[in-house]
Length: 277
Ligand SMILES: Nc1nc2c(ncn2[C@@H]2O[C@H](COP(=O)(O)OP(=O)(O)OP(=O)(O)O)[C@@H](O)[C@H]2O)c(=O)[nH]1
Ligand SMILES: [Mg+2]
Image 1 (cartoon, helix red, strand yellow):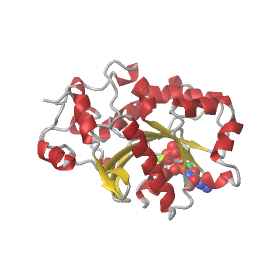
Image 2 (spheres, protein in one colour):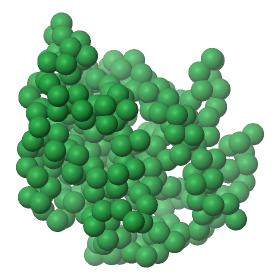
Image 3 (cartoon, helix red, strand yellow):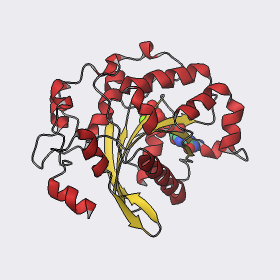
Image 4 (tube, protein in one colour):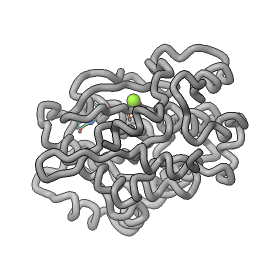
């Protein structure tokens, strides 16, 4: 049996298209404050109206083929833009933590969604930091800042915007390894903005040696509600084995039809081998 981290590295299989390596499968979690543009960004990434723009109280998972990749996007409920994490309802915090388990064996990236048309200062930065760290401090190496409302930038470049917003936003962008991207969700037909984002994600995955994000057990108290079994899943799940999601679904006391999750994402040794070849 391979250790977990080896499995996760192998799972990030790169294929060669032209002179660029890309992942055949990408798993993305969208996080951010309320109204930041998370659902709109999910729609832009998938190229269709998959996410309802009405505020959701639960995670929603959708899937599609985008630029030759199988892309899974998990949308999450947002926090209050400038309020400390203590003010966020317990259920919202649980959904944030739950989001990463919706795309086993873990998302390739977490996109921290921030709009460029409203100011983002220290309070907003603190709120983003605290909410992301519900998922452990490891989260930063897998996070990309996704700026929305790119159409509001006008002639200003994103670099100028980050500079003008000040130290707090600069600190946050640096914390994310200076990884950022801008989307104009009003221009859904602009496929280039999406493929560029996917390439940035792939670059980050490569820099992380193919590792996907999976929080460690010893992280923030926010993770404590996750059942034992989730942490003790086999390092190489075999086809037909129970996925962690039905378990979590039963924990949450009901079905989540909107997640569209059918538990069929386990990977067999054969899948693994074929992907490697
Ligand atoms: N002009 C412009 N409007 C945008 C853009 N992205 C999102 N919006 C608008 O911003 C508003 C909020 O977008 P949503 O995608 O619903 O934001 P959200 O983060 O999912 O919001 P909650 O689910 O309520 O937390 C909507 O009215 C969108 O149409 C963008 O790039 N440009
Ligand atoms: Mg939304």
